[in-house]
Image (cartoon, rainbow, N blue to C red):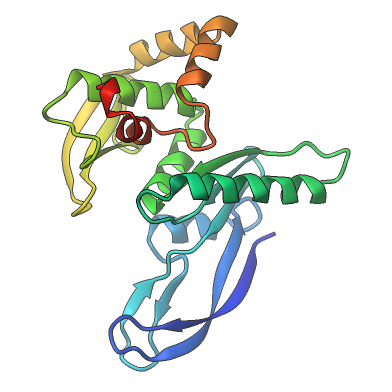
Length: 229
């Protein structure tokens, strides 16, 4: 079930403060309209009662797709604070595990640090793709496009809507301006071959060592370890 909580929010335009209900978690199986609200930037959007300015409040959010059996936790953190975010995520997992009925399996949980990553993960998981294999593909793209794709300034995002039966589509986003700058395609056959290869226990171990989690991100890996480029 989706949950909300009341917050006192200050308008970034006129500084007026007002009490608003914001979502702490959304269950899109029970309330599918909330998925569309997320995609259309309506979720946790606030309209100021004073100046009518509409803005989004970026706050922690638990996205739950009970039908598909996964949860995504969006934890907005400042750049460079990802390790702190991962510790907070680990604490939250312990709390959830303590609340979970003994006979009920715990849904798979994913961690993201931005709204763009949240939307990407939703599309990716709905498409039945493996997040680690997709991040491995991004890792290859960064390595094969050095000089053009600087992970410090360019993000790669999976684009489910423009992907085809033949190609997976990725968009290049400028991290600072958030503008979409280019499109890169990756053969779906090549992805399927990678996914098949990583089904082997030894190869999957290698993939998990590369992306141990809880944040699974090629860009984050390369920003932390620039010598890997």
